[in-house]
Length: 339
Ligand code: PLP
Ligand code: COI
Image (cartoon, rainbow, N blue to C red; front, side, top):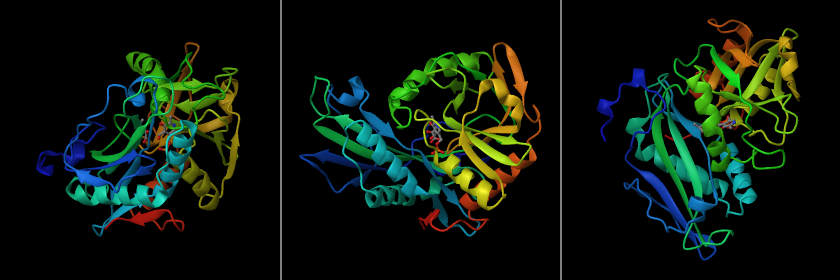
């Protein structure tokens, strides 16, 4: 596909077939050396555990075009480490960090023409590991595939950096000691119905409460929650069933080191939302999406404003996106140059 048909100003979050993807197969106890391929269709056994028993995990990270034309990857070592934890949870072989980062770099280089211009989105990388090979019992697969593909993307939530409203779901996406902290497809399958219900009711997505007591906010669809208090605190849920987001981790570090805030990982009771003067969702796809209001039990709780972005959320956004696209100095080790 040529990149000439792409309108960089109108990019959303949709599948676009780019030129090359990385593919590696695990067989007889080891990964092969991996290759780039033009074929975007996988040919796998009908007995693959990924198809029946959800033995698969994935990652999401972005490559950003800098002003000087060079390309940044943001904290890919953190994605590699999280994928290793997801693989361990589902008894899949882990991909070493250097192999993971090298695969990402190769895919970005091979699809360089799809990296949007500076400030106009990013090239989203989707690494994944799936259980494959002939099998029928509930057990770990005899073979695996590790692949990375890439898609140019803009905003995940329509309109991007403006307040969005969310709806508390009565469903859970993960169990208290389940797989919530792993980035595995089953969590997302569980989120399809609540997400669709929220969208049907004109909300951007569903928010999940803690699965044990349903009294505390856990996660905002495919992103993490944060709240800002009038006392200059950055608060984000602590829970074994929340996905430990890399954006969230980065914002916790930046809130403290650059904005002088107090960072609290703790309970976010749904009955005490008044403590927050601003709130937001954060993630690789969501970047920072301000939360205008949250609907719970038929009432909309408004944080800062339904139209305007709060000042602290805006500062965090500027710092994070500035670092990612090379305009603001990054903490040591956060940026890996591709080219
Ligand atoms: N929570 C869920 C369920 C997600 O899918 C994501 C996206 O990856 C996040 C949180 C945020 O994680 P990250 O910042 O690493 O993208
Ligand atoms: C990401 O931000 O990378 C995500 O995983 C969100 C995705 C499920 C669309």
